[in-house]
Length: 221
Image: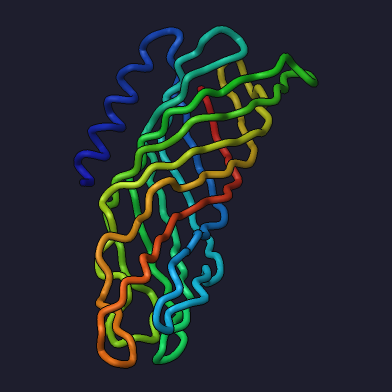
């Protein structure tokens, strides 16, 4: 996976030889949280997210400029996410925390206003990402075996954002803003067997979607 990541970075660097293609770097720390749902069945109920965590996105980007007020942006990101679960069972309350890591392929449209101040523009992002999981682990659980034993290998997100772009030099730009990234895929693959007090199997059909609220910091040159 590391070799593939490096190869993608080299490919992104190589295509910047075209005049209307520019390279960028992105670092976006922020909050990772999730949506957790399930059906009330035989003592399983009260499905809630269990807190939020600090995570980040980082990686190179490529800007395909379309005039002075628009660009199509892609790249390759490393994305870390937190999943916190909390629910009630016939045997007691469960609290768990997991960490997921992805390599993400973003594709989004960046629209710019005209200058609102000297060398400054406002931008808006809309698009999405396709995410491939590279690692997962259970950080905390009060069960003998974690509830989730396998996570799906892929995810996808819708991303929306806004911010400012400041020209620092002839071809160097600083970007700062915020973005909301909403997960579209139920990330749970396999889970441990749920049973009621009589030992019968129960399937509460739990679902988890991950979200990110980020402070976007970037360079374009």
